[in-house]
Length: 330
Image (cartoon, rainbow, N blue to C red; front, side, top):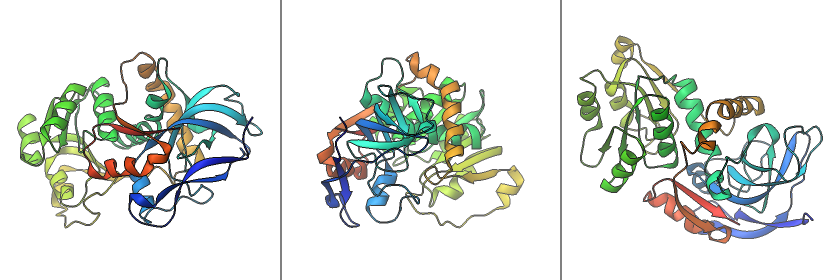
């Protein structure tokens, strides 16, 4: 029996974590091509905190409730759904609404919970794996034998990128902000982890590559990292920006971009079309899900919080002391 009303987290006004409040809203009903998931766990991501502060509005048609990834059981299906049936256990990328007992997902944006995974682990997959796959392997074109640098290696994105780049044959370097975080990155498969508080990542990656630089850089920092990434990149290198924790404006000398034949690119995930996200999901199902099923790749879970404690989850996210994913449980 699906209740008419459900518990969900509301952003009562733009502000700090304290504006997240547990409330009761109508349970959504799946439309054409959609499934309704009884949420067992939901991932917490940096865009959720930006939305909470009032700087990242949901795309048109998406719920105001935060939350971009969920795992749970399919309890209802809309007209035309062919991929899933009631009772299936899935994880899904959603445009919003994850911080709730029930959540709508497009059927093409859901994937089966990998073999041996519980809901908490599965909820840590969609946002990070969709992001890493499309940016590192599709836009960045990372191939086996190339060198790869990911900033923020201890984040959910970073821990995913390290594992996937390593398993697909790249030499992996990363930056992180503490001895403990660097150690965690090395354990996940990074060849070198640079403590950005005490070391210069440009000098370090040049030393590691015989002054050649790195082929692909995944950057979520921005700011003064933008010109430094250009300096650290190899000839024909690709620099992919996915966030700007230090700001999106920088003064850049474009002469090295021209001389090194660099590609500067980036993307956002949430506003992309249904078909674009479906294409990423299909690639993940083919290329990555077998690795998850086999236990060769796994999300690193740092902490879990009950749904009612979403504010505490955001506090931890904003302290940046976590290693891996932060998950809400129902």
